[in-house]
Image (cartoon, rainbow, N blue to C red):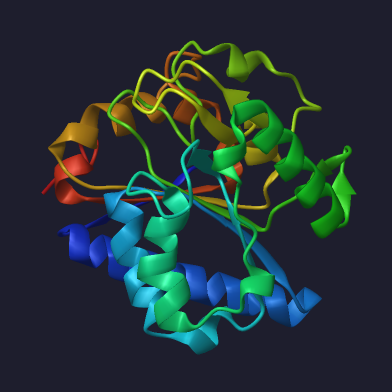
Length: 240
């Protein structure tokens, strides 16, 4: 069962998410010394990262990965790495050795192959030969996409052994991207999905409905999924 929390506004969502991430990472790092967390870009996660960046001690036992990336240089305005760097990595003074970015500048195919290798070398144990992340932080698009897995895309059919995929025809610019596979998202011990604003309300409602390739977020493992939304993005019946 998906755990759904509604908050009064976007700031409350960010505060709740930052506290949730910090608490979960403390527990995982206490149990296994190291927590592996993948981050996404987007305006909603960004505020969460800013709040975490002001609490660097919370990230002491965390290795940071990425859920997806645009095929641009790391200093480009479109880069997810740049967003995370400015909002979290620099303020929290996270050691570069604990940050594993997707090399979007290599292009989708080479970048995906390189990141798969990094994940396989950096995360153990594996489950069914997949690297198992402890937590993946996700946003959701108005169309229901997560990471760079878009509605009806062939990437959704990559199979249970796929780890990291190149995307050459994203419906959102830029068209070339790198993304974790649906299999890796489903294998994660936990996913945290954040959404704010009325433009996300339909996507959240659809995500909580029947699983569908037309709503990639609906294909996440619901028993491992936590969703935090503001009142504007809440599904009918959960709005004030």
